Amino acid sequence: MPRTIPGIHHVTAISGPPQANVDFFTGRLGQRLVKKTVNFDDPGTYHLYYGDATGAPGTILTFFPFADAGPGRAGPGMAASYSYAVPKGGFDGWMERLAEDAVDFDGPVERFGARVITLRDPDGAPVELVETDRAGDAALDGFHGVTLWERDIGPTARLLTGIFGYEEAGHETVGGVERLRLKAPGDARGTFVDLMRSDAPSIGRQGAGTIHHVAFRAEDDADQLEWREALAAAGHAVTPVIDRQYFNAIYFREPGGVLFEIATDPPGFAVDEDAAHLGEALKLPPQYERIRDRIEAVLPPLKVA
Ligand code: ZN
Image (cartoon, rainbow, N blue to C red; front, side, top):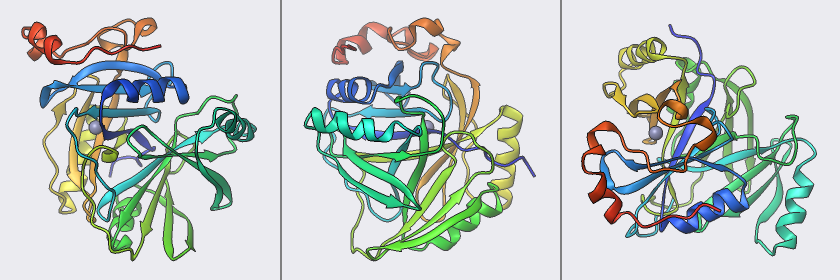
């Protein structure tokens, strides 16, 4: 068996117009745009990556900003939300600044004993901030975790504990919503996966404001291949390895329907531009360089403050 999964590598979501997305995640949340590229399966659309200064795994939130994406809605079989970790001592400051700037947020509420507030991004998607014991200043410290919305949490829990090596870390029911918390061993970023079971009769729909997939970390290509074999042996239909330029990826649907990815830590975002200038230029994979003019002509201009 491969080693345990150390945590989340990235979360990918769908948004509406890109400028509002950039303004919110770089301006309001203080994330760095670490890569400006295109959707490799649809090069007329941006693929924007936000993260910490270096674009470290566990801090990466990515968006496909589809200009004509209708609004989506989370539901069973989809990831419902992601949460950022707020270092100890920074949480009250976040609430004060948001209040001063008249930014609406819900909460704080307690979840497994920690305070959580929920903002909305420009597409109305929830952005959770969780108070943690991590050291640091006011800056967000990457992901705390994700919440998956499941009709039946058992099979997904068995995947995470039986194959990924996660451990049960809490179980609570608040307002009729049952939440099972699983945690990757260790203290990497993004170790938490909450499985939320709700009887609300809701049907999810992919669109702006919803999460497309959740990617977990593999140490390297060899580690990823071991994961691929372990998943296939357990009956999961997992894709071949796909080159995503900044990592290699494999994908499969977990038993509840959420699209999971396992992405390699290397090579990372400094593979095609200087680490000091991440995200400044439009980067294209080799197969699209020859049509750069056409791609640049259809992408809307983007300004990063
Ligand atoms: Zn991905």
